[in-house]
Length: 317
Ligand SMILES: [Mn+2]
Image 1 (spheres, protein in one colour):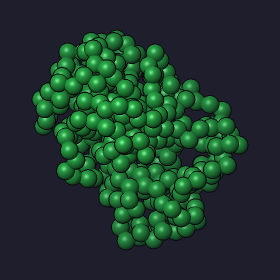
Image 2 (image 1 turned 90 degrees about the horizontal axis):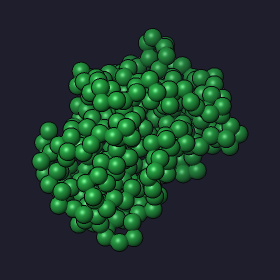
Image 3 (image 1 turned 180 degrees about the vertical axis):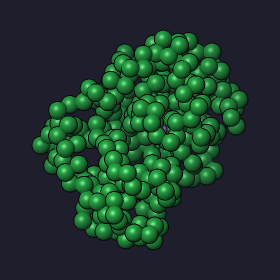
């Protein structure tokens, strides 16, 4: 992997390190944040963990015994490490971190070039945690149960439980090694997918009932209203990943889940054919070929229309 040695050098030469993940964190973001945080603490680094949107309830088990802040550190740090985020712009307004150097560890194609510092990016990695597995080993970190569970959670969330096309033999190899080191895969799967709140179950029901099926089953669109979260007492963070339940039909090509928020409509995109990341970039977002997202500052109805209009330029409907 390019820059691995440079990344290690940066870490070893730094004393105070702020590790940050992106806003609306998913399992890979929180798993990577906590695994790296725990690992670097072993190396006697002064570690500050930042998750701009806090810890989603269903992932809070990963933060046990750690202090995770949602505001940037006050003073200057030697090094800022971004995990699962390709640019500081994804830090949701907390990007003003005074630092000497920056290290970006990610598996998203970089949307902005020329950021100061080192980029440790592997687009073939299913999750940022795959990159961290290698990095932590090179750093000589001891793989404690907490670190193993964090890495497994991260990989399972980004691969939909090792089902999505980003799951490679390398992914399974890392998972196998983590299991051999004591990781309980079934337990992690249960934590992530089978210990959700009642409200989550109900919102999932709403999402499925509201699904609009277009283009003869190729395009599926649904939405979550701002008021749903209050009605069912579910926090925003828990709804990450619900989009994947819409990929149920045999012929689906593209799935959109629209989430109404105060500042606009957050769109989760999943695709089997077109490049979802490039599609999302048109609306100021980004992501991978198969999974991406963007925020559109229009009404729910207008957002639905604009997405369908654009989509018709990309595929035959
Ligand atoms: Mn990821």
